[in-house]
Structures are given as structure tokens and as C-alpha cells.
Image (cartoon, rainbow, N blue to C red; front, top):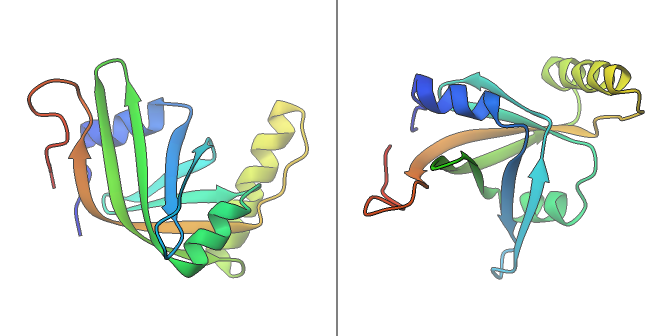
Length: 136
């Protein structure tokens, strides 16, 4: 497992949206913006599924994903494996979190599942000679 640094975690929390990339088993790619995200610990993030269709099908058939996030000239790509929880305490906590966020925004949303990503590799996205360098 790879661990996010304090700075990586700070930036992850700061940016409103990350990009979740998935692929079918034959390699057809898919990337979607995600705003309902949180850090569980240095090696694990959670993404709530409200709208996933192709993304969910891809993760069920190929659990390898990437999450990219950046601001200005600093950014990171997390690569790892996901599991999808649609019951249990973590899912219930996620559903409550999404319901509260939606209520505060004046909209109606419901979480269909908690996507748990175990981070296995971390790469830098900053432009320049170190672009794409494996950091962890």
C-alpha cells in the first residue's frame, strides 16, 4: 500500500472535484468527475456513488481504478483497487453524509454505495521534468 502525505491529503480535501478513471476488462476507458469523496486513512479513500452507471459496471468487472486531483501546478494520481459496499455501517454512514450534504445544498440525493479505494501507487501530476514520477 502507498500512503498519502499530509500535503496530498490537504489538497484532496481542498479540491471540490476529483476525476475517477475506470476501464472495462478489455481496456475501454471511462473517466467521471466526483465531488462526494473523503479520506478514510493515509492508504484509503471513499467515494460515494450517486450516479455511476458505466463507472459502476466497470468497477464490478475490473476493480483497478485511478483518481486524479490537482490545483494550479500541483497534483497527484492515486492508483489502486476498489470494493463496493451497499450495506453495513460504512455504507449507512456514507448514505447519511450524502443526505446531509444534499439537504444543505437544497437538493435531493441518495447514495447507492460506498466505493472504498485502497491506494497502491501515487504519482505526481505537476508539469515539468518530474511529471508522472512515482511518489509512493
